[in-house]
Image 1 (cartoon, protein in one colour):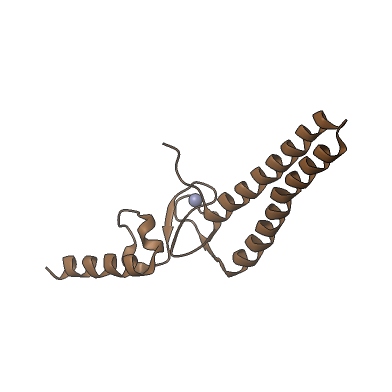
Image 2 (tube, protein in one colour):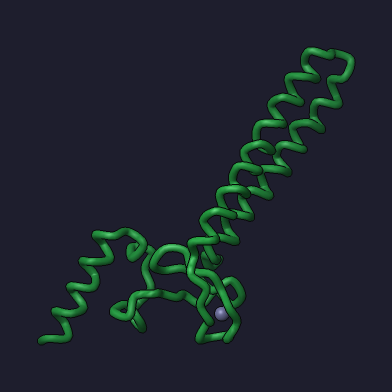
Amino acid sequence: MKKPGNKILRIRGYALALIFIGMGVMYLGVFFREYPLVFSIFLLIGMLPIILSFVIYFWVGMISTRAITVQCPNCEKHTKILGHVDFCQHCKEPLTIDKELEGEDFSLDYNVDHRRKKAIEELNDKKQK
Ligand SMILES: [Zn+2]
């Protein structure tokens, strides 16, 4: 199974894929260049994913200013964390900004507020016993 990657890199990957999809659709339109109407419809449909990917790039730029830069304990490079848990951009080490969750089994549940709180509560319960 492929390990999930860093969130910001993953979103950028999707945006890049959208550009290729858009270009692919536009390229298909070339086969219909004798029919200007069909050709322009292909161009328009191809434009949509490209516009969407620009929106995504813009959005990634905004959220990455909010992301926290940390030094990865595994590869010692600097990486950006989005949300409470994320993966290192370089070595895909799972990282968390919650002290309580350090060293625990990694779960994407921790990105959901109430599930993370529940997990922290359960961990505290375990420690008290
Ligand atoms: Zn790392």
